[in-house]
Image (cartoon, rainbow, N blue to C red; front, top):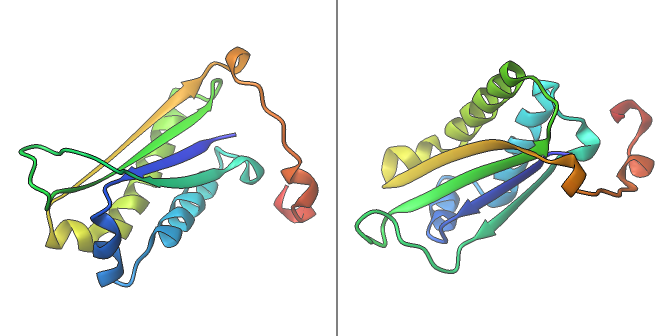
Length: 135
């Protein structure tokens, strides 16, 4: 049940477009990288983007941009497996965002953290709608 929540500055969107990239492609890259780790069940992967209405970075220069990926998942996975997954997903993000990093002021970050299952109830019918080979 991992949640991949991307938070970014609004000035990132046109920078992506200049390079033929977009937020939907960013979501796909994160989802594919997460699935490839083998740590997360496909049926539980959720990636979403929130573009900030307001933000302030460093000296307040409006030319600065950022993207932060926050990953929340149920506890119980081995630390080494989570470290490997974090490295793989961040590498995919870095590759996707490389043109932005190379041409503008840009900050990229990621954090993975566990959710206390006792405080996070879940319900889903997604598995009923996935092809059997994806389960």
